[in-house]
Each structure stands twice: as C-alpha cells, then as structure tokens.
Image (cartoon, rainbow, N blue to C red; front, side, top):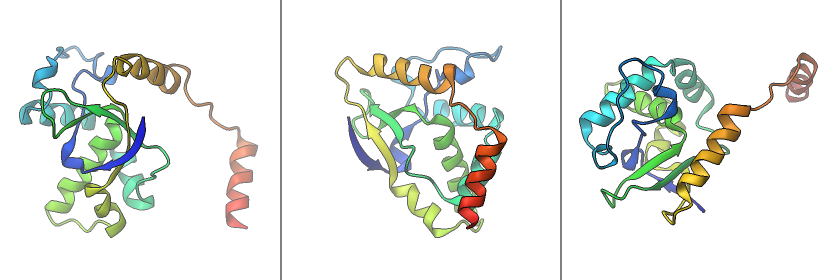
Length: 162
C-alpha cells in the first residue's frame, strides 16, 4: 500500500458496490465493462439516488478531507484507470461537484484543486485486494464507526470554539 494522488478522471466507481445491490434492478456488471462511460454514468446516477447531497454539501462547505483517503487498485482492463475499493460515495459526490463546476456553478478553489489530485491509498493487485476490500468494508460498514454521545460531541465543539 502506498499513498498517492490521482485525477478524478482516472477513478472508476464500482458498479458492483455492495451499497447498490439491494435495489431490485441491480445486475452484476462484468469487470471488463467497468470503464465504459455508460456503466460509469449509470453507477454515478445510482449512487446519487442513494443520497449523496449531504456529502456533496459537506465537501463544498468544508473541503475534501484528505485524512480519509480513497482506497483504489489498478484497473486491469485500462492501465490509466483505477477502481475505487472504498470511497465510491465520495467519488460520486466529487463527480457531482465537478459537473456543477463545469456548468458554471461557483465552487471553492480548494475543492476544484482536488479534481486533479484526489488523495488515495493504492493497493497493488497482488491477490490481496479482495481480502483487503472485504476486511475494510467489514470494519467500515458492518460494525460501523461508533458515534459519540452528546457529551463528547458538545466537548469537541466547545474545544473547537475555544
């Protein structure tokens, strides 16, 4: 694993993302088709339909937080592309923002700069990608990050204010 930055245009959202699989119209997409424009556009639309507006608004208001890097792996069917293992919603939100920016919406410059330099962690294709993907997804989405209680949230806000 190594940290890197990649242009948004090189990052492919995963059309077989677990988040999308509970939809009645879901159909598995063959990996060699992930890079097709219509597949990417359809996946981005489904991710938008899952509700990324709050995430989009947060990125525009607060910037893209590089602490939680997008996890990617080389895409074997196009040497210039990378498949997103973790962070599909954030990439969909960035694509939404870029589309808005391209159509004339005023977007803060620090967010626009991310379009060419998305902070990522690159997991090489060495047989460990599936294990890493399943382990990471289990930690992030099954057990979940434990939300703080009221006191802890209030304390953080007070500390930030002070």
